[in-house]
Length: 428
Image: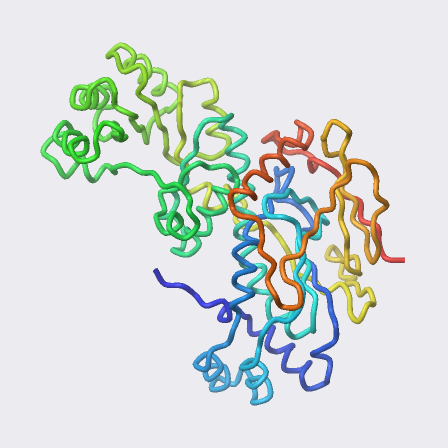
């Protein structure tokens, strides 16, 4: 699988700024950049922080190779001064942010990058590329997990995404609560449990459906899943049980009116004595389709296109903005794009019962501490040295607890206000 080196994610305009800053002497000014969103995607009540673990590794390994610098020099993107700076580049600053798996809302400072202007601004495209993708997938996946009401979800969208994005999406979906992925690279890279079954092509390969099922069962045993909707679903189920017996693990249905078909399939399986055989459904499922099947006898969902594309919101809308220079708060005043200057510190307030009620964000200060407050930022990089982040499974558990903590209205799939309000206190 091809892997794009992180330094190649640098944008031309970033090097334009660095070139000028190196020439005028401002490149090393101590700066603070923050990642946040001005608004959530339409219909969403929370965002999910995802991709931070991947990002920190990419920042740690962020280097410009000689051939990359030669390309930039040859094409006139950089001069010799900038080329020499790129050759020596190592990030020596700090990165702080919300924990992976935490929730965020408009104005939440989910990542803070501080250091010299040039060493921080060169990371902008990398930071936004990773976080906008992974946060979008995780938010969609979390909504699907809520809609599934405890039933198992399999991520199976690799064929609907760029090959590297597919691996990242599988990671984000697992973080959000999916139990399996069909992406083997994600299984190898991140230790995510993998699952999958045959496609329609395998059935069509054989002379008839029974022959295909017999081959699969002979190879994999009865603890497998047979795809029964290539021809006629009812006959497919009969053939599956006839070949595998009543202790077949599961059948999968990938088409049709899933609510009706799931009921009919459960009745048929039970009548054949296969009362423990599970029903897995797939086929363009999103959170709304999954919610509509809540009352049906479905045991597991397979989600593909919608989860890897953020279910209609393929980006989290995150921006990377300069908020402080040499300890001085700086602000952008553009209409509809204004920022609040100064480095932020954020806490989330909770009732004694644990329900989150508000997020307080203070610029160039610290919120007054109250019982049940939780500080939201933690250190990821200190002086260029990486601090070990939580494991993926720990982040997965953290998200589950965060979703439990928000008011129940915040879990609705319908449009509404953010699950909790964010109050930003500007620098004095």
